[in-house]
Length: 255
Image (cartoon, rainbow, N blue to C red):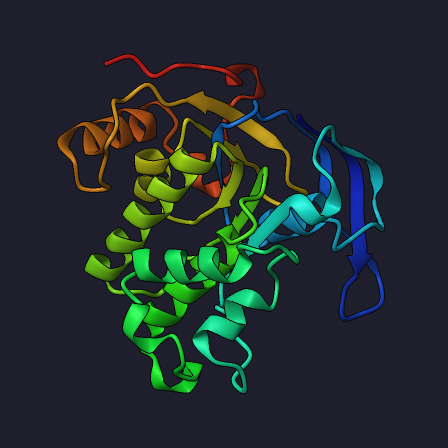
């Protein structure tokens, strides 16, 4: 179980003054839940993931990973972050736990990503979409209980991004992992999430916690997703700027 309660997170700005990035942010994803985090630029979304993932321990508050050891957390960043001197397969094996079936599991994942014919290729030979698929396979190779995703499909063309979303959802449903997925794309969030948490502007806190009750599978351009987006922005026109009544936490948006 994951519980997040960040009282304060600050860091020095360019002038040496303390910049308050997060304050009063509380979040408790359910086991196996896919939670998307949406908010304006600079509101602390990536900082939140770094704190949850243990990459940043300099904050006031606490994060509890009950039943989730540190090596049971997967992380997929905005950039693939592949090692250019390692093959596709070795990039995935780089993070794999020592196990007799690690190589077979890595190969199976890469084949599921339609990368079986480039296992020995170096990242520089791959397209951007192919590199993201390698990163996705690497994130899931250990079948983590907690997955942290920081805008993993940003800047991809629409068909490639949707193909990767479908691969990701398939892996998530099979693994049962709890997921925190940061995105700027509201339609992406509505199409993926069990729940969408909207953050305020800096310092970031949750201003709207919205359960998503649409049936799966979903795509960002589905009629139901577009209709939900329209109703949401009609009710909260400044939501994507980080403004919504705090009292609306847990609200549902009626059809």
